[in-house]
Length: 273
Image (tube, rainbow, N blue to C red; front, top):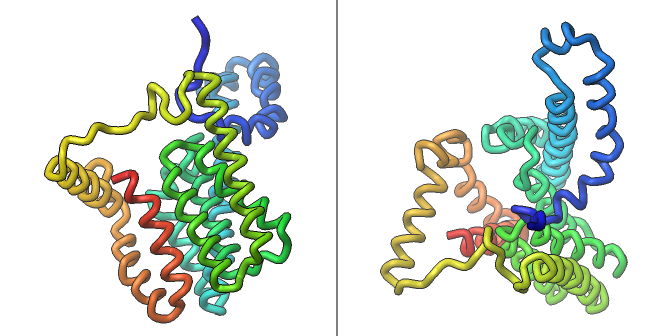
């Protein structure tokens, strides 16, 4: 007899202030605009609100493209090339299809890419800034349970940066503390809603049926992610065939960034598979 959210609460929490501003507008427009005009445009108050939400998500997708541009410009030094590759990336179906939907994929990509760039290419100068970065990384889990591997990968990068002298011990402590704080928030919310610390009726751990069954499941999921004719990434965006040779080139020419990208990708994919 009580309402429960189907997904994790991070995204509604982040976007609640944004939605509070335009939320009354569709209702006002739906009652103020002439009915003939609304009918001609096939609109009502609910659809106007949905279009406004699509606009907000499109702006987030634009920020994702800008973040990729910042990374590529630092890599290449040729601004025109960075612009063209960024545009190509945001125009691929994998990104474009999500760019106007209230889903977690684009905000996840934006947050993860921002933390990766700051840890790998831009020095984190203060412990406070490191704490904010850790909070963003840990917040990925609050955004969606599937992002647990991303949080682990970014925390591994922070530890590696400390070993390589890019982060002080204090900055690392602030990073891991910020991540732990957001993860604790997700745990507390889950416990308050469902009485469990980790899983919910919508996100549970799979059963283990032995090595052979595990290997088969991994193969099915991996091939499905890439070449399934309905959901496969390469079926919609063959340009992602360039990802693997691109990662090899990164490893050869920018060894630390190539390694860091591989760690984050693997940390995300392994739990999914």
